[in-house]
Amino acid sequence: MGASALLLFGATGDLARRMLLPSLYALYDDGLLPKDLRIVGTARSALDDRGYRDMAEDALSEFLPGHDRDGASIPAFLEHLYYHPMDILAGDDGFSRLSEKLEDTSDGLSIFLSTAPSLFEPTIRGLQAAGLAHDGVRIGLEKPLGTDLQSSCEINDAVASAFPEDRIFRIDHYLGKETVQNLLALRFANVLFEPLWNEEHIDHVQITVAETVGLEGRVDYYDGVGALRDMVQNHVLQLLALVAMEPPSSFDATAVRDEKVKVLRSLRPITCDDSVLGQYEGYDAELKRDSATETFVALKANVDNWRWAGVPFYLRTGKKLAERRTEIVVQFKPIPHNIFASRGANSVPNRLIIAIQPQENIHLSVMAKVPGLDRGGIKLREVPLDISMPDAFAGPRRRIAYERLLLDLIEGDQTLFVRRDEVEAQWQWIDAVRACWTETAKTPEVYQEGSLGPEVADALVKRDGRVWHD
Image: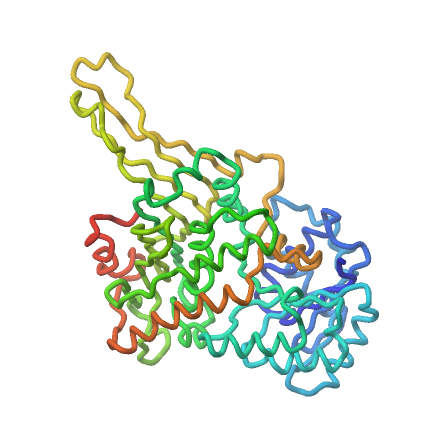
């Protein structure tokens, strides 16, 4: 069953302005939303329906991709927007009036909940009291979902008191990115890669999520969590799970998530020698206080199963780095015997690079012979095979992640959402990393803004005879 109403908590915040409202308009403009869908926003801002529509119009004007849309349908779209000002902690009366604003939800209601972790429990309690947790209601949960396993379980318990697992949609927006999903197509829709996707042929895997920005108004939140919990616990570990998972029996929510959680439970607890912490110079000045919070982390992870025995996964993420880049690098092993060595030709191992942002493409390096008569010896050269996703699919419009995730929430497809056992497996591994740091009093290494991170991160891979892909 679809939904006849969509309820947005945090409806005046940065996420709503930048991502949710432009995504909903794009879906509306393409005729993908139910034609009578009511979109009700709620937040503490003192707005009425007209005021919220004006705010939404401004947000669309600022953040809607101009090359994709002419905005002709904006006036009609705005008529689907309604607003109810509410302080979640003010009591159940606000939720009762919110229910009146939503009108009849018997045909289905989808909720997008983006709020502070401390407000999850009163929000769920208020929804229940107002009759907004019935069998036709689905709830999407935006991170952060806790700061460790215990707090995550408390939040999940609170949500589970009103909603069964098949109506809970935990959001990791990376899973909505086109190239991330193309990783599954690359592996499981092509006979070329899957026979090689194992420890016999792959030397190691690198996953990099690099940002050029700093805190950007998230000072208090970020200093309380750091890079490990802000990025590795969710985005990076989800990418690792997609790379390492076994082939699911089908592309549906249960089959895909069953295989991902097996990978997450197979992660070997790391030692402190397998982790690097960094903090960009000037972070303390930005905070106006001393802090040991890491803004960079690099880890060497291992998946203890037959497919990946002995294959390290090098993970890194950080802020104020040289470039914005999210990519997965699959480094294959060298050929077992170079038949061209006697003719003076060297062979470089193949490498598959799956670029996720800022540009989406797939790059495979292969060896080819340099043209010539070869009287001075055969020359081999690494040749890139590039698949630029925008060029390869010039017809279909590129979708941003929240378009897909919001539509899946409204339609009830959980495939690209995170299940509770996945979240808990991720937190168990992350908590063990942090416990190791605490026990050894490990502190961040300072690195320069605009660099590649602390130099000790290079040593993490160099000691294994490898280098980062930069």
